[in-house]
Amino acid sequence: MGTLQIVATPIGNLEDITLRALRVLREASLIAAEDTRHTRTLLDHYQIAVPCVSYHEHNKLARLDTILAALQTGDVALVSDAGTPAISDPGFELVAACIAAGFPVVSVPGPSAPIAALVASGLPPDRFAYMGFLPRRGAERRALLNEMADLALTLVCFEAPHRLLDSLTDMLAILGERRAVAANDLTKRYEELRRGTLAELISHFSAQRPRGEYTLVIAGQAAGGARKRDRNRLHVPPAVGEPSEAEIARRLRLLREQGHNGSTAARAVARELGLQKSVVYQVWLSLGDEA
Image (cartoon, rainbow, N blue to C red; front, side):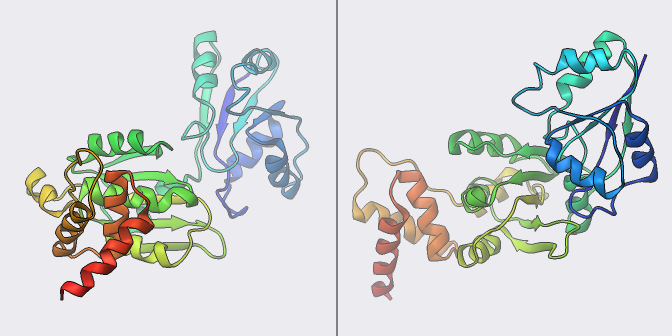
């Protein structure tokens, strides 16, 4: 009877793999890889010639019987494209199936993007909540953030570049102003950890297009409770009916008084009222005449 070996692999730098992981990969009878082409790059680099089978989000249930059959005669190594399998990557169902079938399951620890970003963020790492990939739909994302808003835990999550600004804006609106870090290209040549407040990150990525997948680390709620968060959040009351220009201007003034810039305020109001940001921003520009 074989063992399922959950093997962590590099998240960017091929040198970040343990001697144990290399031995386990060499000794396995089969490697279950999220993307066999991606994993083959790692295996070729270390001259490991072990058969691979794909195991990813779209075939993970269909592959269970194949992998369980392979475990009857030898070890199977489970790897993802980067980092530790089953952490926002396929693997949980396979681990559960192996345990249910009586096969041993062993973790071969190593790189993990959430941990790498957390420990380098400068935010408290002793208590944290990992949220995985944020939901793609805005309503679901905001619901999740509302669930986490009152936790005095550092928050860690993944986000794609084309949704980064929307997610940061939601965080500012729901969590209130907090320290945060946006990390990308971790362990690679151009690794960057952009530190600042949520508003500062929004301002930065409004001017500089996000590139690559981001790991976000956000400070937990500070001592003082929800009242402090409510004072600092981008709170915009829900609209009734078609919003007038006067209503849009009123909401923008509220945000301006809280110290938020035009881009942040326009994005928040546009989201709340279901309008194009460019339309709302034109109203913001008109507020300059009031001075």
